[in-house]
Structures are given as structure tokens and as C-alpha cells.
Image (cartoon, rainbow, N blue to C red; front, side):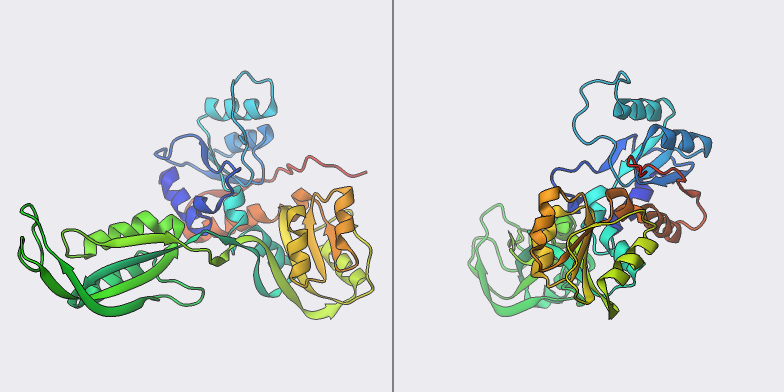
Amino acid sequence: MTIKDITNHLEELAPLHYAEDFDNVGLLVGSYTTKVTGLLVTIDTLENVVDEAIEKKCNLIVSFHPIIFSGLKKLNGTTYVERVVMKAIQHNIAIYAIHTALDNSFKGVSAKMAEILGLINTEILLPKQGFIKKLTTYAATGDADKVRTALFKAGAGTIGNYDNCSFNIDGEGTYKGNENANPTLGKKGKLHHEKETFISVIFETHLQQKILKALFKSHPYEEVAYDIVTTDNTHQHIGMGIIGELANATTEENFLSFVKEKFNLQCIRHSELLDKPIKKIALLGGSGSFAIDAAKRSGADIYISSDFKYHEFYKAENQIVLADIGHYESEQFTKNQIVDYLKNKFRNFAIVLSVKNTNPINYL
């Protein structure tokens, strides 16, 4: 089994196309063709994690956070990043990072937080725009079913809980081939009228090459007429954060105690309590101050994330409780999530959960 075999499955959960532009995801060290002897999953790739991979005979590390975030201009071991990369290369250990690709997945980091808290009726807090494209094409009416079926198999036509979605109009197309043409229907040099079906389907942006391949393979015409546009529609299952509900409302104090227990926290930094019941919850794993306004607009009673600055707590404005549980703490279950996912895909392969606590913050 190669690294590519494994990452293909990881990218079904979190396509790299989902990642934010500032991020650095994918295979950071190593070659996709390398055969994998063992796989170690971690939140961060530090030197002690590489040592753990060496000890446990794992030559692939799947890391949530990327160890290489900005460009490396030298490798001489003066920083912890350089030392990690050097040690990994010296021991032929590959490093793959998933980060915001998983953050933006509906089954990703925030979804795991919601699962830990037992939330129901979950949806994306900040759904993404620009991730849905629309393909329009035209096929002879007798070939329309064949073309549509091929597009659906390639992943087109999925809208929320529905698939095989398309819009179709029957009409008449015209064309005239030149002396070099080889028309499937009609004769070159003569104007041809053909009963055709207009077919329109949507698809996720990262599937474009696959969709076009299916279109060209299934379409009988020598020249396939089509166009693709990017829509402004938000994607229901791609984006940061989760909104959900408790089965039963509770008090602010009880809920914060519940969060502290479930996430094994030493403390929670929070804004002023409002003496209101907690029912609707907004969550975002990692640094989430950018989504405070979205949490307020969602009508959530409390927003749980991390890395709030002093003045950002004022943004609560007596409308919501803001709770900062810590960056590592909010993402701590992510490695378990990745391990469970991979073990379900590869039942007879060594997938190891790192036992290293890579949280750089300590509490007195």
C-alpha cells in the first residue's frame, strides 16, 4: 500500500480543495509512491512525534497541523520546524497535513466537537461560497440519458440530501461541419438540424476534471458544446464551524461545567453570563474569533472556540456568551477522529494514535 492509497481516502473525508488559501496541506515531506509500513496520527508533528514514529516503525505521519506553514529557506536545524523536517527526511518518514481541509468538512473538526457535546440538528456555521459550479451541455435527445448517467456517476447533480439532480429542456440544435469534420450525425458541409436536450447539472469545484472526463467519454459528438460557470450559492456541507442544539436546554453554569468535563479542561475563559438558558450552540475548532459575528447572527446562545483576544470578548454585547476553551483543547479529539476513519477504511493495517501531548500551553 502506498501513501497515495491512504491519502486518496483521507481526501474523500477532507478534499485538499477545501483548505483555505493561506494553509499548507497535503504531502509536505516524502513521495506519494512510497510503500507505507505504518501510519501515526497526531495533532502536531514535533520532534518527539517523529521519534515516536521511528520507535513504532511508522514511515507516514498524518498530522492535523502542518509543520511547514510558510516557506523554508534553509535546513540547518536552528528552528524546531527545521529539526523536525530534517529528522523526518533522515529516517525516511513522510508527513501529510490535513488542517483546514478537515476544518471545512461537514464531518470535520467542529463536527467532532458537536458529537462530544451530543448536539442535534447540526449545520455549518459559515458555509462556503464559490465551491459549486454549474455545467451546461447539449446532447442528441437519444443520447441524453447516457450523458446524464455518466455525469451523475462522476459526482455531478448532488444537492444536499438529493442526487441525480439535473434540469433538461428539449429543443433543436444546428451545426455544419467543415471539410475536416467527422460528424456523428449529419454530413460535413451541410447544415444539420438535430433534436437535442439541454442538460444542466451542478458539481463541487474539485470534481471539475472528473466531470469533464465523464462528459467527453460519454458524449458521442466529435466536438462537445458545453460551458461551466461558478455560482454564488453557499455549500451546505463545506465551511467552518457548526451550529447545533442540545436536546434539552440548561443553565449557563451547568453547560459550562458540562463542557469543562467533556473536554477535560482546567479552565474556560468566557464573557459575562446573561442568566439565560443554553439551547443553541455554535462551535468552531481552533482560532475562531473571526466567526463571532456569524455566531451572533445564527441566534446561538453560546459560541465555543479559542484564541479570543481581550477586546474580542466585548463583541458579545449581551447577546451571546463567548467561551474560549483553548486551541489545542478544542481540536484534541481530531486525531482520534482521523484514526477511527482510517481504521474503518483499512482494517488490516497498522494505524497508530500518537500518545504525545503536543499542546504548547501549560496551566499553573
